[in-house]
Length: 80
Image 1 (cartoon, rainbow, N blue to C red):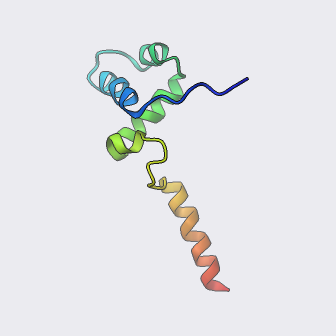
Image 2 (image 1 turned 135 degrees about the horizontal axis):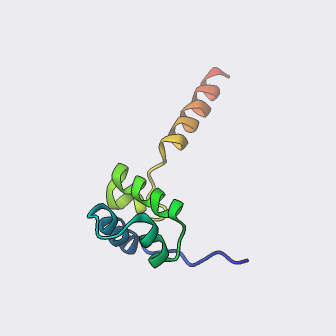
């Protein structure tokens, strides 16, 4: 099964803003965008945490988990 096409960040923003404004539920937004409710929830979380830039593919900013792992790797390298 092939991966569905990437959804542009501006479309994700429109979806999330309609959810945040109470115009649609997460479930309805997911159906309209043809993605899972989990995906819409992740978009919402990213948007709330990072604004529209958080929804851009390859935004360049590591997630908090990625930053923790990078810090651990750096600490391990310093220990050598």
